[in-house]
Length: 263
Image (cartoon, rainbow, N blue to C red):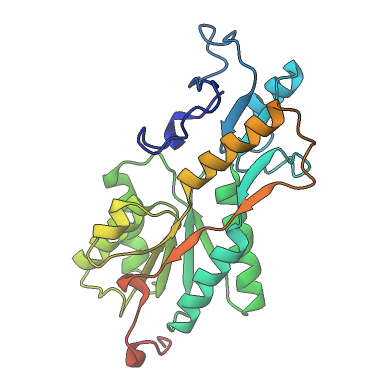
């Protein structure tokens, strides 16, 4: 089985082997030293659109389960995915209800379901609510200084938004630091939310509203699905779906008098 390293759960929370089934971590299937590792089945975490690894394994006829869907293969149902549409819509509704009129979305650059579905949901929500959509990309590979350099002109601009939704919690925490340096009050002048949850969002000053993506639950359900597939289960009619949890925190919770839209 294969899990991409960036998304492996901590060892203490990783699914334990069941019924004598072993779990092998293969970092890169294209690495000649591991390309021929024997496996009964493979789990791919967070595939990209038209994922090359998934294509290769399907070509080999190896049973595959994906954690998140390949955005270009909606018909592949041996997958467990997250309901981003409901969670992101709830977050945007919350920001609107707290007085945000201009919400900027900064997603990552990797072509996976997390980034794609978030952008699609934001654009649809903006259209429904009569808002001008403002989106930009924030590469997951940026270091702290480079990420801060993206936020500084955005928050200093005369067209500064009154809410920013940032892909990763570490970058959301950086946005909060830049806002503080520019004397912006969070959440009164600027609301900040993240599309992932971690210690970065929980210990930020103030704590940042975030989406808990249930990585441990995704991993557990994927292993269960793989074991069922290896046991001969029928192909599911649709992918399994888990719901992210929206953690509302101080960074987006304005007092009633502060929740009026900024003019």
